Image (tube, rainbow, N blue to C red):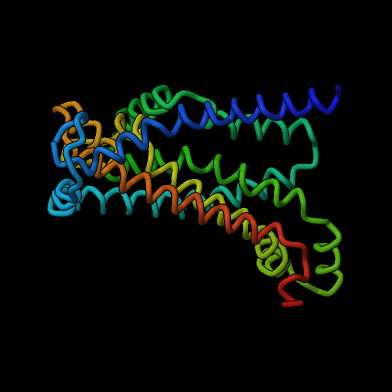
Length: 272
C-alpha cells in the first residue's frame, strides 16, 4: 500500500512539474517557431525562412541599441559585483545576529520590491538631484538592483568557509590584504562569478526599471522590443527575442557549470 501511494504521489508530482514547464515555455517556443515563418504573421506557418533574422542583423539602429545594452550590462555587473562582494564581507563580519538579519532584510528590499516602484523611485531621485536621463541614469539604476543579487550569491559561500583557514593564515604571518586576496576571494570565487552572471542576466532582461530611467535618444533592447511591439506585430521582434533568449540560456548554463565547479570537494583538482 505504501509503495503504491508513493508511486502515485511520484507520478502526480511529475505531471504537475511537466504542466508547469509547459505553461512557462510553450509561449517562448511558439514565439521562436514563428520567427522562422515566411508568412509574416503569427498564424498559418507557410514555410521556413531566415528573412527576419537577416532584417535584425541589417538594422544599424538596432546594432547600436545592442551595444548600449551590452555596455550597460557588463559595466553594471562588474561594478555591482565589486560592491556586492564588499557588502557581503561587511554583513558576514557583523557579530550581532540581529544586526546581521536587519542588514540582510535591507539588502533584500530591492529584490522583493515591485519593479514599477523601484523604477518610479529612481526617476524621482534622478529628477531631484539633476541627473540627466540616459546612460548614467540607466547604469546607476542597474547597479542598484544588481548589488543585492550579488550579495545573496556571495554570502552563502562566506558562511561555508571555516574560520580556521583565516586563523591559520594569520598565524603564518599573512596580512589582512593577504588573507582577503589569497584565502577569502579564491574560496568565494564561484559565488562571485555566479553573482556576476546573475547580475548580467537581470540587467539584460530588465524592462520596467529601465523604462522609467531611460531618456530620449537612448534605449536598451528590452525597451526597444516593447516599443516595436506597440507599433504592430512583426516577426523581426520574434527573431530578436529568440536571440536574447538563447543568449540568456548561455549565461544560465555558464552559471551552472561555475556553480558545479565550486561545489567540487577540495583536492579533486590536485588529484587530476
